[in-house]
Length: 249
Ligand code: 13P
Image (cartoon, rainbow, N blue to C red; front, side, top):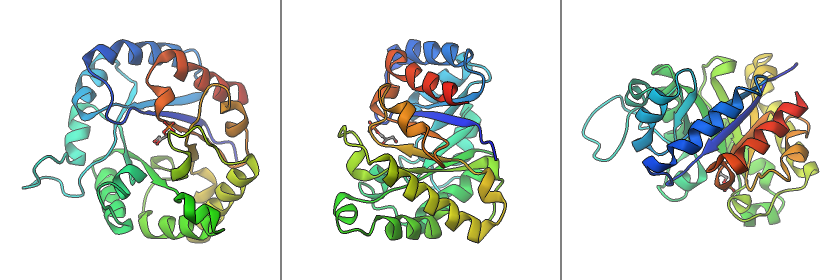
């Protein structure tokens, strides 16, 4: 089944108001590649302004709390993201699983909260280096998928992002064969649990994607897009990735 390519920028903790021009340039260029879905997830502080400045563009959060409101100092709830103009949110990024101690159950609860608030979800999974080196990467990631993907969602509302931790920000990328093996295993696991819906779900690759390697990674079997960190911060680096996705149709 044909799945639309999806290229998402995760700005992480980068971006002051001065960076809004980059988003404007990215979304302007994306209009020329209508076959590709493009989104930017800036820091919380820029979501409202970016969504207001870019009507119709997909602007998202990088995390949300699982509760709709309450005494959770410093946290942001999914309905708040939607209220600010976000249409999607990343949950389960390794920098939160590892840095903030988020479990699969936490990630699943966040995904459920986001879906309930009307947001689309990009749910991240990925193995640490020692797990890859020991040969256990697929089992590790499938356990994350089993533990963190919610039971009920529309296929167009939840994408998985496979991000091997050792490939994030390092310039290292897995071989295409390893990416295809992982994405195929994830899709098989989704099919076993969700039947036909799995064919419509998008599975993104993330970790050191750039303008040079995007065509090869995005052209791999079962790779439906990219979740991009460092190379999403400027139009000059991000737009070539969008263009590579568009060239693949
Ligand atoms: P880099 O593209 O900087 O490796 O980051 C990937 C990532 O973590 C996106 O969520």
